Amino acid sequence: MAIETIRALLEQAFPDGDVAVVDRTGGDDHFHVMVESGAFAGLSLVEQHRLVNRALADPLADGSIHELRITTKG
Image (cartoon, rainbow, N blue to C red; front, side):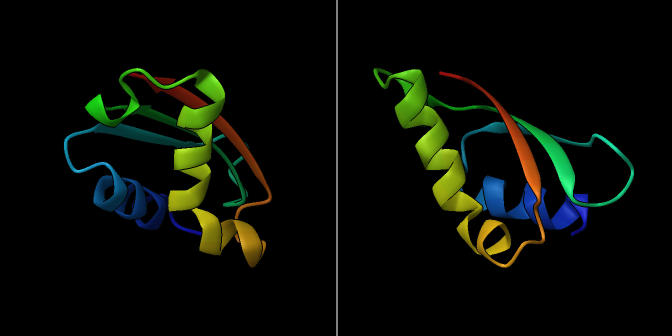
């Protein structure tokens, strides 16, 4: 999975957000995503991470993303 694809999915889900994606291992399947968005205001960390997981549901389901680390900020 390309970093650009993940970034595009996150930017679509969080259009007001600041998004960064890092390939942690160079193998195109272990990523760290960092999303700062007003959409997280008032949400718990778990709820914020659920929104990110929802945005990446397809690549997570098909195994394109094997491991995902999430950092969020509202």
